[in-house]
Length: 531
Ligand code: G16
Image (cartoon, rainbow, N blue to C red; front, side, top):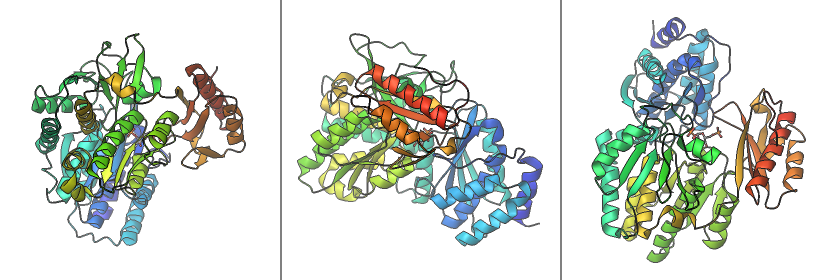
């Protein structure tokens, strides 16, 4: 029996597709209830072998549902340089996952033909997982998929998503970038942080204490490993480390960003600086309490502004003619965009949600800073070597903190933020004072089928269902500084609503009114939002 037939037989016997439910490769891979994912994982193991043979490189498979609730899980493939797979591979993934068990050989053969794959090439697949209870058995299913097509799996066990990106890239660049081990990863980050602190100096006003909410996820143990290498340079006090609370439940970057409040599991005090990771530690947001005990969020937009302003200062100081730009999504707070374009004179581009779009767009600049408001982001520069000659600091930052972080990395982004705060001698309040956010609100609306909502113009306008955009325009026109858009999530079964306005009360009301219209026009289910 050849490998493809054997793989199909194992699928039917051990990893059958039991539900006739279509699942698509979304914003960040497949994501749904963990109970529905066994066959998906096995088939992604098969696909990873084909991808490895096609690209003649090691491919990564990460098992995580990132910010989603603990009951969910997900999987995504990592391309040879640590980037997301091209669109055609996302389509292959959707085809392979949704065919019947008997249909597997035909789909594999069509991929082999389309990509002209030599099935004799030795395939190598790196696998890692987050801390969800379901992740271990799902990673076994991936492993069996890889073995079924005679590929060679290497299971790293628990890693953050960005760590697996790092491992894949190191492996495929002959270890030029670093050792594909955890020691290699932490050693590289710690050495760069130490170097930047020593050379650019740490202002006295800077406090190296940061309280980290690790979302009860994999980032907790990893941040501790980093802490062991940093000594007193940076003092990370880690809460929500998974020993008590539930993953992402009332904690983590997504909760803090969307709810605009401190997470459970840590006692927030004024004068301190806090950071929240998400479940697989590829996003980070900061927050603090002011002297009036008011909560302040320093989200991806604030991080982008801090980083872009710092890099612009370095570039301007060098006299080099490098163009620096920022990439955001529709979720970016209007004040951040105004501050950057009008005050800092940094060009800003807007793209659809998903780091793959931001990453791609950022490459149009010599130095492209990209961040989603939810805390995903990094800096891209295709001119790293060029920067090295003139801008040693910039080069160190790009090379060590940013180069590989094609999806953003909470840990290296935290080091980047701390490097800049130390250099400027800033507290969280000083940083927040760069500009004031417009009050905003996000809601999730449950609908029968979220794909009925279709968008254009980087997701800022709705094209379907008919009449929805006109209603949103009408509502927005009633609010000073009002802005709102809706889009189907690519990771959860909801339609997302974003609104901003002059006051929090108005932003809340606008979001609710837009949510009601979505509910009415897009087939809402369950409770209708009420003002
Ligand atoms: C993923 C993507 C992000 C995206 C987020 C929410 O993040 O990598 O680019 O912003 O999902 O996407 P959506 O609004 O389509 O649900 P994560 O941290 O969950 O992997």
